[in-house]
Length: 181
Image 1: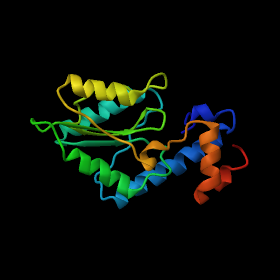
Image 2: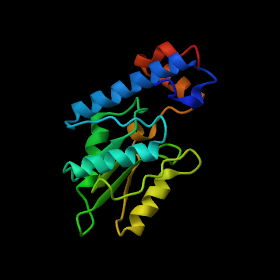
Image 3: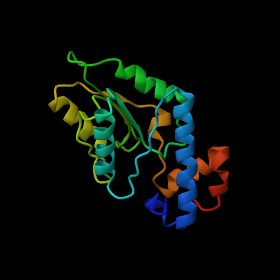
């Protein structure tokens, strides 16, 4: 995780960014377990997030998975209710049984996706554009009306020093980072 959270390099050294990334990833994994999601696999997006999650989606589908729940690892406010909302929204589907549910980030990015089948979209995560809009457009082009969820636990990712400052001030588990943000 030495390359994690690069946009925080102005306020955290690589070791502290790695510690923050691990702490948030542990929280997301624990939340998925609490929500009853199984099995859970971790895709490493250190090199090319889109390629890494596309490979994970192909692998899941080849092993017989009919649905894929993809959740970003930097969601310290994520709660089991957010996961339940994604799953519940995924029960709504197009007439052919396909579904796309987008957990939208505060900046218009994509922090979670529920896909049926797992390879129904080309992943388009990006820092340069609002990937939730791109994912929604891809779904519509494929004949699927996407469901976009806007929930605080799904929206509040940690990308900027201001995000980190807010997290350190209002979340007890992350107070150790308050002096740097």
